[in-house]
Image (tube, rainbow, N blue to C red; front, side, top):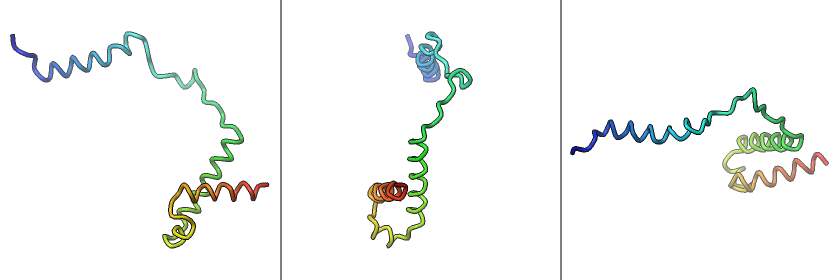
Length: 88
């Protein structure tokens, strides 16, 4: 008995991968059925701080970045702290 062709083997493998989802009736969630939650004021403020710090970081020249802390996480941490202090 000869082995099935590579194309037939690929089709069978795809069928085996796709079959469980079809058998179980799993489909993508309908956006009308599951509406997205509105972001909280706290998460909106955090997102705004991240955007502002990112804009400041991109505006810095390489020597300025080296003076501020050469990596984004360190700069971002100090920037967020500074922005929170300004709001208080």
